[in-house]
Image 1 (spheres, rainbow, N blue to C red):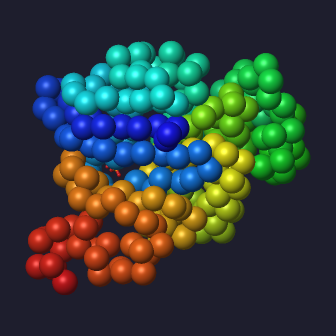
Image 2 (cartoon, helix red, strand yellow):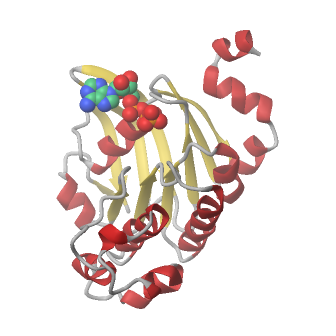
Length: 236
Ligand SMILES: Nc1ncnc2c1ncn2[C@@H]1O[C@H](COP(=O)(O)OP(=O)(O)OP(=O)(O)O)[C@@H](O)[C@H]1O
């Protein structure tokens, strides 16, 4: 059984379908990588799955339970964590206070510090003073200490230096290896495919590829075509 099973999902914005007929699974211990060009609908899809915006069709099943109609708070408590774009830390609180806010009764702060030792060194610092990379680590760690079954991470690499991005990619792999199911929306396709298991490519609101990350990583021409469609062929 998949930790997350999305079937035929439709999500509208301003009454217009932005993503349509989406199937996606995330399994415990695996990373499902979701790729696609700007405006393809990746963020909209994650927001529909987590309940930030309502869905207009299809189903979302979390650990075997149909949560399609549940609100975002219910889904979060049921084990679906959504790390949204923008690294929203509680800026006036310390790193550790940010983690304590989300701490599940059975989880320990050591789990966060084990994944990101950088945060242990910064534990007493106001999180608004952290670097962009450290803030990204903090929002992922904050999701982790909530003991989720699934973590969806949206564009964690945006605006970060390559060395920091590589550090985050390694941590996300380690996170999945603990048994969490990860959905990773990422602009750096090659890096994401290198750590991922299942790959998905969204184009103009529809899924145009589902397969193994290792297969897609080997075929950059295909990836290019999947991103851009016929327009990509014309431009090539
Ligand atoms: N609040 C909104 N109201 C109306 N349309 C929106 C809204 N947010 C996004 N859209 C539109 O929905 C489509 C998909 O946007 P979305 O942000 O989901 O794509 P994305 O794949 O995440 O892109 P990016 O990589 O640029 O973040 C775009 O055409 C966008 O203009």
